[in-house]
Length: 115
Image (cartoon, rainbow, N blue to C red; front, top):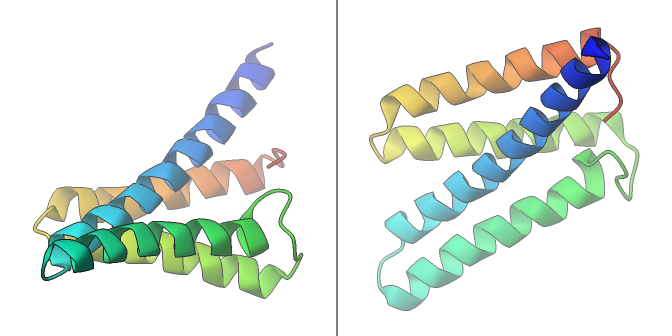
């Protein structure tokens, strides 16, 4: 029972971290773009690009099972989100976020939890 709850909690956290990363990229795009149209296009475009890449390479049921592409997608998504947060002045979140991601991925992979 405890192992099942632990597994569910970590897998849920992984999903929430993925959503936070997409949101952080969109937030960076909206805050960085110049002009209303550019802000919307950049924010939406980054979110759609991130979700598309995730679905193609990094999702549990990814379209393509290419380990190198999965790792590259995760590094780009989580790293880009952290860099965006840093650039926007959210220094604590920019440092804490990747640490939480690495800890969560370590628990999932070392604990052999199904993603």
